Every structure is written in C-alpha cells, then in structure tokens.
Length: 292
Image 1 (cartoon, one colour):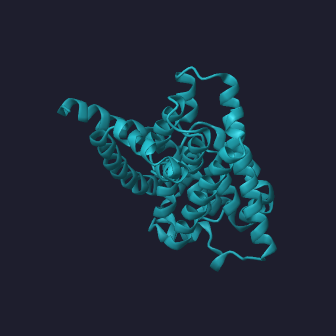
Image 2: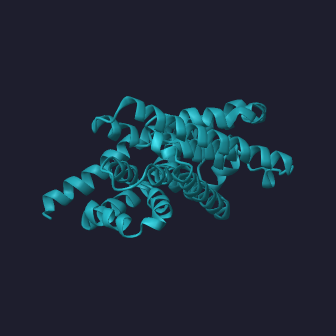
Image 3: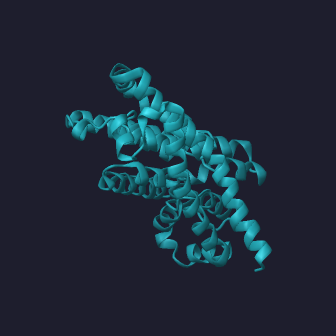
C-alpha cells in the first residue's frame, strides 16, 4: 500500500464521488428555495395533494443509477415536500452503482431488467403501504414543518436570494459529506474487499442481515461490493437484494444532517433496514431468487 495508491483510491475517488454529488445537492436546495420564495404555501399544498401517487414516482426515479437522487429526496422530505412513503420508495428502488457494475460485468440484459423491476415493485408497494398506514391512522405532520423551517434550522440567510442561499446549503452539507466519504474510503482501502467478502461466507445464516448492514454504509462502494459478490456466486440473490434495497448512496447521511428531529431520521433508517432484510429473506425463502 503506497502513498500513491492511497491518494488515487481514497482521495481521488472521494473527490470524484463528491463532484458527482454536488450538482444534485445544489439543484435540490435551489428547488427548495424556489418553493419557499416564489411558490409559497399554495405550491406546497399542491405538491402534498399530488403526494398520493408520490411512491410511484419515487420508485421510478430511484431506478435511475445515480445516488444523487436519494440525497435530493432526503432534503425534500426534511422540508416536508414529499411524503415518507415517497422517500422510502425512492430509497428502496435506488439502484446506485448496481446497474453500471452489472453492465460492465456483462450480466444478461434480462437479469438486469428483473433486478430493477423487483426493486421498483418492492419500493413502490412499501411506499404506498406506508403512506396508506399514516392516512388510516390520521397521522398529522408533527408541528407541520415547512421548507422555511428547514432553512432556518440550517442557519441560512434566506434574504440573500435563492441562488446564494442554495449555494450556502450545498457547501454546508457538501463539506460534511466529503469528510465522511474520505473516512469510509480509507476504511475500505485498508480492510480490502476480500476480507469483507470472507465475513459473508462465515455467517451464511445471517447473510441477509449482514448484507443489509453493509448496504446501509452511506457510500456507493457498498452497492459495488454487494453486486460483485453476487456476480461471483458468493451470496444469494436474496442477500444481494437485502443489501441493495437499503443502499441509498449518501441519502441517509443527508437525511440525518438536515433533519431537525434525529429520532425521525433514525426511524427511517430502522424502517429501511427492516424492509430490506425481510424482503431479501422472503425472496430466497419463496424461491424468487432462482428465477433471477
């Protein structure tokens, strides 16, 4: 392990991931600032009324192989622009780096379509069930938090205008994410993929839970690892999906950073983990993985 290798695999890779994420963060905050300064309460209410089909759009958008969408959804959920079901649907269907890896490894097109479809169906159904449950329980938005309240929580100066305020948010969150990416990539660099793969093979009974835990690592490297382990025959289709369903890129990091109530963000994490691990177990138990 030379200094040059460390600089290339940790520093440069982290900066590349950071560079890909920045435009999504900026556009997300720009949208939120526009809704706050130009659209006002009327637009927020219109978005909420359209939220009944939000999980469908969340599921579709999540299929796009770009972890930036999960970061965008996290900010919008923190501002109560989208529903919890929409957020979960997008999180579960997010393909992250799975699709590029499958294509690069020459996986069969039919396999790719099936995996994307399974993630979309699970995410969308889970999202609709979550939103339906909240409506049946007549749950209200606690304290009715709005975008401007998120803005105040983040300490921005909204009078500066939407572009400067959005840039303030982007740099504030971006610096935090860059530090985390550097730490995570450093851990992967020193541990190595082989050692991580050995952990899966030594605890096959807990494979789904372990895969879900690895999938929760807020970095695109986790989806790369899990996908490659499946392609190499080291884990089952259910284990792979347990890990990929909970993989949100940096979505959870952004959610914990911008949420006023960290307890709510932690609840989302537990919900995501439970759905992902359970779905993977059912896929293997019912033999669905055999047809993938």
